[in-house]
Image 1 (cartoon, protein in one colour):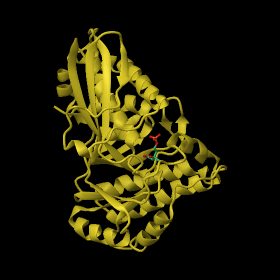
Image 2 (cartoon, rainbow, N blue to C red):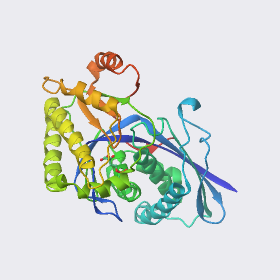
Image 3 (tube, rainbow, N blue to C red):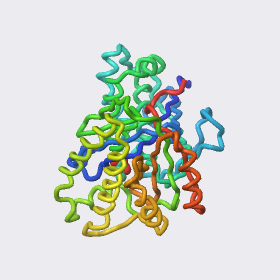
Image 4 (spheres, protein in one colour):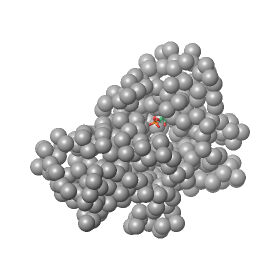
Length: 356
Ligand code: PMV
C-alpha cells in the first residue's frame, strides 16, 4: 500500500567566503567559517514516496511526477552506485537525527510506511558551477525528516518559517554535504563549526545573480579531494585566521550595505581559494582560458564605487552578483564580453522548504 508523497525544493548557494578544508572529516566540521548567498530558482526538487514494506530507500532515475515548472526545465542527475549509497546513508542519518525534534513536536512514529522511493531533479545543468550537492542534500534532508514523522504534512507545516528547526535540519544536512547547511536559510548565511547562522540585514539593495558558463564538463578534482589537498599548500598556514577575519568583514559590509568592501573581499577570497588549489603539493586548477579572460575583464571594475561581486566556486565558471537595478546593464556587458558562453540568471532566495 502506498502512503503520503513528500515534495521539497532547495536552492543552491554560492559562497563569498569559502568552506575549504575540514577540521573533522567524519562530521564535516569546516576548518574555517564561511558565508554565502542562497539562490532562489536554481535548485533541486525532491519527491519522496512512502510505501508499506521493508525499511529502505531507493533512488529512482526518473523525473518526479509533479514538478513546479515545465518538465523540460528539469534534469535527473546521473548518480553512480557510490553516490546512491551516499544518499542512502544520509537517509539513515536523518531518520536517526530527527527523533528529538519529532518528540518535541509530538510527531514520533513507528509508522508502517518505511519503504521510500526517492526522485530528484535539478533545474540547472550538471557541472554548471552550481553546487548540486548543496541543493540536493538540503532538499533530501527535509524530505527524509518529514518521512520519519507520524504526519509528514504536520511536520511540513511546523517547519515552514521556523528558525530553530531549520538549524537542526541544517546540522544534519551538513553531515551529508557540508555546504548544504547554508541552503536552509537566506539570502545571507554564515556557517561556523556545527552552526548555520542566517544574517539579517536591511542595508542591502535587491541583488541579481549570473553564472557565466565557461565550461560544462565534470570537474577532474571533486570537492572532497580538494578539501584534503589544500592543506598541503604553503598558503594553508594562516588560512583559518584570514578566512575568519574575512567573514567578519563581509558580515559587516552586509550590515552596512557596503558593496565595495563586499566585492573586494569576495574577489580576494576567490583568488585565495584557487591559489590554495594551484599551490598544493599535488597542484590542480579548474581554470580554463575563458576563466582567465573573465578574471582579467572583471579586475578592471574593482575600484568602481559599486563593483560587481565576482567569485568562482570549485570550477571554471564565474559567478557575478550585482544590484538588481543594474541587471540589464550587466547582462548586455556579459553577452558582449562572453559571446560563446551561456548565462544562468537568478536572484537571492530564502532556502529549503516543502512544496505543497
Ligand atoms: O560541501 P562540499 O564538500 O561540496 O564543499 C564545497 C566547498 C566549496 O563549494 C568549494 C566552497 C563553499 O563554501 O561552498
